[in-house]
Length: 126
Image 1 (spheres, rainbow, N blue to C red):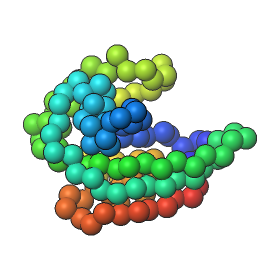
Image 2: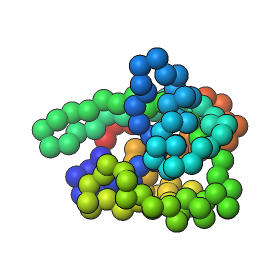
Image 3: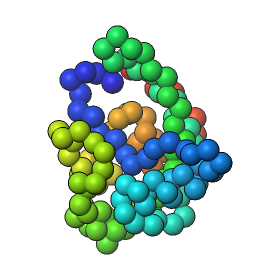
Image 4: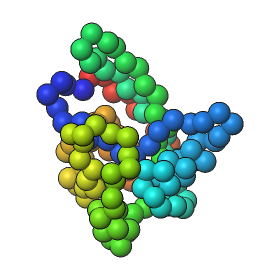
């Protein structure tokens, strides 16, 4: 990721000990969005490499996707995200998929969005 690029990410977080990946995504949805989503679909693994300042990073992300209809999308756009532990400069915004495709980080995350597509393993190097 370039230092001057905006940081745009999808909801998610770490898996707790003794928790499955699916349990983790359902918990994270509840914690970060305040709603219980159902039926997340495992999409694959995204392996990302990047530099920031003097540090190098290598991250493995288990990617799940969720169908969001217009009603849910509208609801998510109007949620209060003040409870999240993010920097004061952060702005929580939901984008339509076509717009998100232009700005999401890591860039290859967008390749996981089509529901029903085969499992993927993508590698992205900054």
